[in-house]
Structures are given as structure tokens and as C-alpha cells.
Image 1 (cartoon, rainbow, N blue to C red):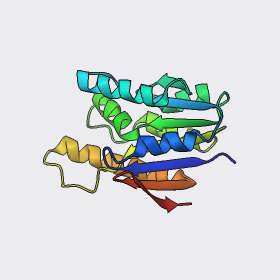
Image 2: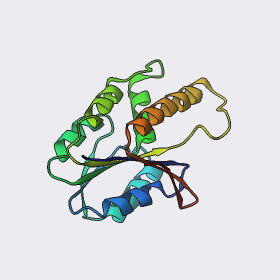
Image 3: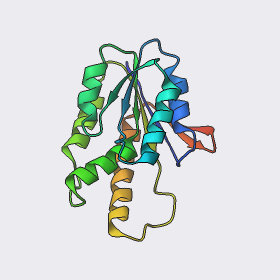
Image 4: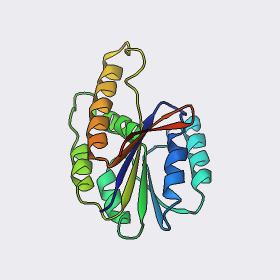
Length: 172
């Protein structure tokens, strides 16, 4: 049976590095990048991540339809990293607006994860441990991210929490 591995933690906690380390145990590797290079800072972050994974990964840049990207990769690789769910959610909110609470893309991802053909490593930010955001949109984002993370963690076989570069196994 193929595994789903869920990795969460704060910003710069080591989530992506942990995902890459786990993926390197597999021979054929895929990567679904969700970020949109909308400004210079994001372009630099994307460039850094590309260098980290080098040519060891078949990469699909997909900011909206992760389930479709999994289908394109899963028969040709042993493992796929999805990096990252919280950036993906931001893309969906920007595309559809804040009034949407259940995106079809999210439902499609849940459905796809019930029948995967390779291992999947999901990277996401844990954003609900900080202060309560002052504006409605930020609170809405935090809440939806929390619900998505709960569902993905439940679907996973293993889950890790990253803090200051250290790994805490929380499931599996």
C-alpha cells in the first residue's frame, strides 16, 4: 500500500528539507510546486527550492489543481512531494475570493488521496498556533487551512511536526 506522509510546522521550520530527505529514499521522484512567482521575493524562494531539489525530481508547477498533477506523475515516479498546501490555499482564495469555503480542487485532492499509485509527501504550514489575525480574510484563511490540515493529517499514514529543524513524529 502506498503511503501518505504529512509534514507540518511553522515557517522556516525545516518542512521542505524533511520532505526532500524522505523522498531521497525513493529512486524516482516527483514534485508538485504550488507557488506562483508573483513578486521578486517569491521568485527568489522558488529559485532556492529548485536548486535544493536539483534535477533529482520531475517537477510540475501547479498552483490550483493538485489532484490532476498527481495523476500526471504518479505512474512514472515512486514518490511525489506536494509543497505546499498553505500556499496552494492562498492561490485558491485569491482566484475564487474569500466567500468560498469548500473549493472543488480541495475535494478533488481528498478523493485522489484515497487511491494513489505512489507515496505522497504533503508539506503544509501550521498557522493556527500564533496570535489571532486582526482581519476577517486572514482569520478565514487560518480556519480553512486548519480544516484542510486536519483532513490531510487524518488521511495520512505518518505525520511529522517540524520545529527549529527538529522532527517530532506525531502519527504512524
